[in-house]
Length: 187
Image 1 (cartoon, rainbow, N blue to C red):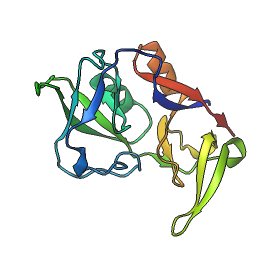
Image 2 (cartoon, rainbow, N blue to C red):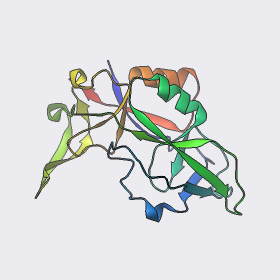
Image 3 (tube, helix red, strand yellow):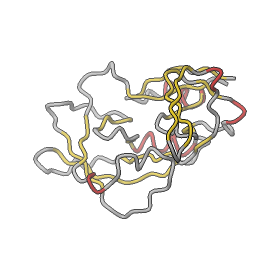
Image 4 (cartoon, rainbow, N blue to C red):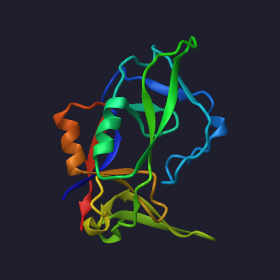
């Protein structure tokens, strides 16, 4: 099976960009580490229509979090993965509720599948954490993905989101927006 690194579609224009209004209370890495979020804070974003006015299924935001539409949430729930969906509120710059339904998709499925032989990287040793790999191009072991369609990597490589060809195919067939895919090497 083929796998891809998921990212924002940077070739689009006029897409909505969210800015977190109260995220100083939330750690920057809260939704990139693969850990369940148990706080009960209302997470509030705002947007400026002058920056963009096209609502995509994967919304750009100033935190780099995986913010998804209701439509994309439904697809993600059908995929083989473990994802927590956290409600957010979105207002325009004049503090008017947009009544748009979006979620932070907190990916909890973390696998130890990084294949260094197929990756381009450099190493850094950090006291107390061990060896950290700064990866330029990813490679993974397919047999260590546990059949997941959406996941992150263990060994301090959790930030990127990886998806299967099954996920990518569903995105393309159903015309979901805001996403780009970069093929990665598979062992």
